[in-house]
Every structure is written in structure tokens, then in C-alpha cells.
Length: 187
Image (cartoon, rainbow, N blue to C red):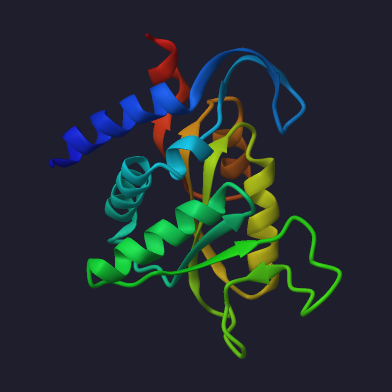
């Protein structure tokens, strides 16, 4: 399937499985009359595959070491991308950042790294399923920077177009999205 055909098919899956109308309160605290819940798309076999393939295509030339982001939205994305990157012969390892470190076990804030492995000096992209203001992704950025990583990009599947571009611009971070909310609101 061509990239444009994959993008069109994924758009339809997101529209059908993950986009809705009706008043909701967003993670940012704002109210909205539309929402995206990408979990049904990320956990659908075809949706997961298309998200991973399109994300891989968007990132393959960025010479990344790791992909990850804040739990829960980044977990299925990072895992699927790690798998497809291996299949394509250009492995990009995955991790995720806990919103709050576990209070038992190793008490890690960043999960997915092997014992002795660090993000120190690694090129990292922060990925997110849906971005409104960018606050959630910035939490992940702060954690991985504290771990010594170089954050080269924030990539979201859907940009709600409600301030994230400005947030990341002010933080000096490049920001890209696969889709914009306006694409779904047209129809």
C-alpha cells in the first residue's frame, strides 16, 4: 500500500474508532465538543500496523536511538514502532515514562531499559497519541532530559491544534504530527 493510501486508510480507522463529538474534559482541563481516544485505533491490528508504519516513515531518517513518551498513550505506539523498525532493518528501541515512579520494585520513572542501559547521550523522539497543549509530552521531555538524552523531536499522531505548537516552539523543540484535528472536523 502506498504511503498516501496508508494515510487515508488510517484516517478512516481513526475517524471510525477513535474520534467523537460530545462535551468532554481534556487532560489539559479544557472543555471541548470533540474528542480523540486513540486507544481503540492503537490496539486494533490494522490501526496499530498503519500507525507504526507511518510513524516509522516519518522518523526513519532522523537517526534515532529511542522512541518513547508518557504512559499510557505512548506505550502502544512506542512498542509497535520498535517492532516495525526491527522488521525494516533499522531498530529503534522503545521506553516509556511513568507519570509517577512506582512505589515498589526498582521505583523507575523510565521503563523499558535493560539493567545498566541508559538514555545518556541518546537521540530520542517523544511520541504521543493526541496532543492538546503539549503539557503531557513536556513531562516526558523533562524526564528523559534529566536522564541525559537529547530530545530531537516531539511527534504526535493527532494534534488538536490548541497550543502544542507554541508550547514546543517556546521550549525549542521541533514538533510534528501525522494528522491535525481540523482534518477530522471538516467532515
